Amino acid sequence: MTQRHSTRGAWLIILASLIAGAICVYDYYTPETGLIGTGGVVLVACAAALMLLASLTLAMVPNRSCLLQGFLVVSILLDIIGSSVAGYFLESPIIMAAQALALIGWLMNVIGDAADRSVEIDDVED
Image 1 (cartoon, helix red, strand yellow):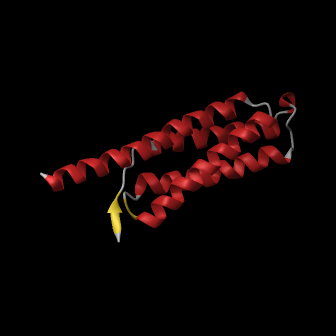
Image 2 (cartoon, one colour; image 1 turned 90 degrees about the vertical axis):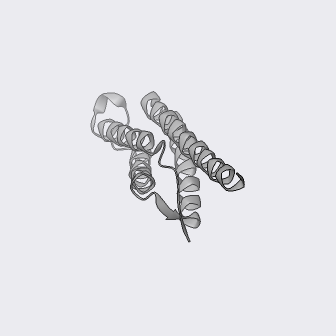
């Protein structure tokens, strides 16, 4: 059974994943960063790509099953946490800031979905 879910915040997550991916590519190829060729940057870049795909699904498919919604919400949150920790260990404040932006988008999505559900419940009770 598919339901209409909120797409609020998905575009912030998309923006954050694009920023994180771009910074990872920059860090990987720029000798001045000290991160040239490191595996941690590649890992964060892969995580940013996965977050981009998941957030595009959030934004483009508003009618999705509850199982898919739960999977996307949990996987994006785990990606945000893991990429934030990796950004901390890589000493990259831009990656950490991008993940903070993604967390704001994630919160907007979750809170917006809950608000939409409460409005639907209120409409039924009246």
